[in-house]
Length: 479
Image (cartoon, rainbow, N blue to C red; front, side, top):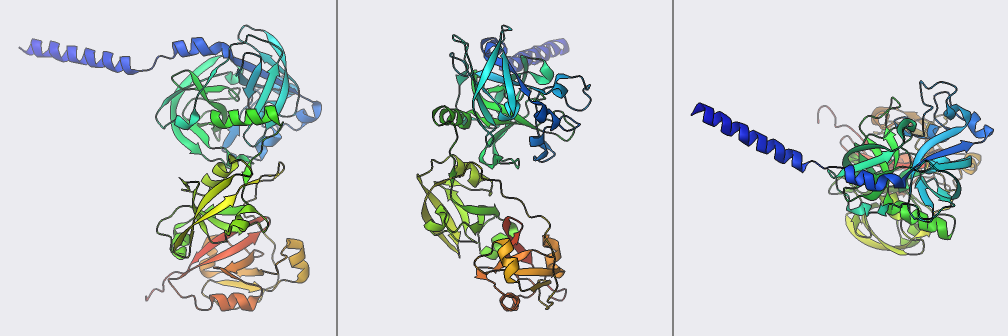
C-alpha cells in the first residue's frame, strides 16, 4: 500500500511538473521570425563629439540625467580598453526595420551628433543609413537605408500592456548582436527625470538590457513590437533588474510627424506643477493625496485663458485621473496642439471642469529646473510661527528676477518649522496661500495668525523654478 501511494504521488508530481513546463512560454518561433528584422547600428561621431566623451564612456547627454538612469550605447564603458571603437568616436546600438522599403527605428541617443551611420543586417550586409529625423524628448530616431524587400516587424499596441505580461528583447548588448533576453512588464507609464523626458510614459520591465541594446525592439508574445529599449536603472553601469522602453504607440506617432513635417509637435498648457504632499492636501482641504498642484501659470498660456490658478489641483485630464504630477505632462504632450481638453480641477473645496485649448510646446523649450541654492541678503527679522525672516526686494532685484508683477519678498533667515522644508536664504516668497505678498509687512500680516498645529502653503521661487512649499507648524508640547 505504501509503495502504491508513493507511486501515485510520483505520478502526480510528474504530471504537475509537465503541466507547469507546458505553461512556460517558448520564444523560439518569435525569435526566428523577428530576428532578421533587428539590426546593428554603428554611428560615427566627429572629433569634436568624441572629445566630449567623459573618461568612463558616458556622453555629454548622459551627464544631464540622474546618475541612476543610464542610456546605453555599445562597448566603451568602465573597464573597456582605450583602443575600443567607442573611444574612436563610434557608438554601437540596435535598431529594427519597420517597413520593407528601408525605414528603421532606433534611439536618438544612439545616433545623436553622428556624421555617419551604418546599419548591419542579419545577413551581414552593411548599408549606409540616412537620419530622416530625430526627437530627443522621446529618444526616437528614424533612419532610412536604400534597400527594398527587407523583413519588417509587426507593430503592436503598447496601450494594451499590463504588468506581469511576458516580453522579449532582441539587440546587441556589448556588440554581441542578435542576443535574446526576456522578462515581464513591471510597470506601465513610468515617468523619468531625464532631461526633457517627462513626456514619455516609459514601459518598465525586468528584461536584461545592457550597453548596445539601446534602440532595439521589445516584443510581446504575439511577436509584435511594443517598445524601444532605451534606458536602464543602474548605479554600477550594468543591468540591475530595471529597464525602460519607449512605448511603440508614442514612437510611431513620432515617426509619422518626422516623415511629414521633420519635427514633432507636442501639446502644452502653460503650467508649472508639483506633487501633492500629505501636508499640502490637508492645507488645501483635498480629500486624498493625489493630482498635480499648480505652482505657476504662464500669463499668456492656455491654462491661464481657461481660468486655471495657482493652488489649483488638477485631478484629471480628458477623463484620465492624475495620480501624481508626472502623469500630466505625458498626457498633455501627446495632445494635438489646437485641440480642446477638459481639466478636472479642485479649488477651495469645489471640483471644477475647465475646457482648455492645448498650445504647442516650443521646440527648444528647456525642462524647468528643480529648486536649487539661491542667494542671500540682509535680514529684516520678525518673529512668526513659521520661523522665517524676510525682507523687501529692491526694484533692481525684481528686474533681475523677472518679477514684473512686483510680487515677492526675500527670505533672509530660515528657522523653526521652516527648517524641515528645504527653504533657504535667498528664496523668493511670492504668495502665502492665495494671497500675493509684495512687502515684508504684507508677509508678516499674512502669517501673523498662524499657530501651532496649523499648516501654511508658500509659493516660492528659486532660480527658474516656482513651487508650493507647505510648512506644518508642530503642536505645542502642552497642547
